[in-house]
Image 1: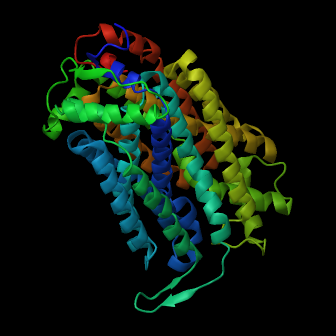
Image 2: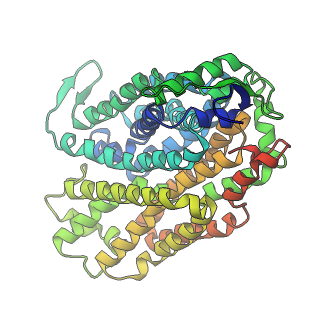
Length: 505
């Protein structure tokens, strides 16, 4: 058929005909902003927990709970928002998630003790989890197939950059010395409370941007609202071809095989396909990969580790030590009168920013090669190589050499984007948002436990922490070998007739 013939065609072909232009650029940027906003309100504890320790009087154990509680919020919120997205719409629920995140994060800034902060941070993470899963799902279902891998990895880069944003915002705010009494709450408004409030700003901006986006046309088609889906496709085409006379010559979209059932179904109707063949193998594989992905606990504690590293190096006491020797050298840090116990020094925040930019740059390089290598194959290579670096971190008794190996190990954060892209490729539209959330839920359980375990190990058995977590990450390469090459899944899609992930682009 020629492109000037009015016709009824499959959804993916119709989406391809809308082109890739300004609408997609704006949506990709909005998705990236949503992910950064989620990280800032959901995981602000990375910066806030150590800087609020003096006022709230938190112990190391309490700080560990505060730092890890976002993972529990992600666990409980992930499946709920996935289900709501699959039944009520991606865009609508994304707006609800953003609004609630702004409200609860504002309350976090008014915490009067660590218990109140714990509860409010927990609620903030639950409501903000939808920003990640729903924004990514909305993007994946609105981008042409040829650009899908690229945009998924691009938005993954923004998640990595969120750590840089977190540190960059903290640098000018944390050192501020102001303190204003709020008598009726019995607290003082100071720099760390201001930082928490400022972290809500991206949510506000993202909310305004999402109001300018359309609902997922694929969601509407699956729901049986073909006319609404066609209206959105025409609008996207018009925006992408605003300087062209080309018309969107499509009269309708063919229903997808076995996907014509409306989405008003029970929770179990959506979850059950994930634990039955043929999707079960993908659910198990991606879940195990998520369980083995224990880079996040190191990222949570990275500012504190970097702070310790800088203090030791500045004192000239640790050049011949490995990283664990530096971490365990508490006496040297305490003897430094310039080291404030409830603050992070600027060099450590700059190191955190540097790690974020380097990791994001590496992720962009992956964007250039992923279509040639495949996501699964990249996972095999990266998890094995980076896991070995994690194990080797404390085999090098030189502060700088050990530190470099640790930074390379932390590069494993890019794996999150690859796992997400694999989930999008493997699971069909009707369960995709739930699948992404479900796989991440069990991974969140492991990350919560991992954050607590790592906190304990760093204080008592530091080297064991690197050996265990590094080996676990390297083991992911073996698990990934049992998953199919995602490039073959995409190629096989047009030939599949059964309800399985092979149909999904």
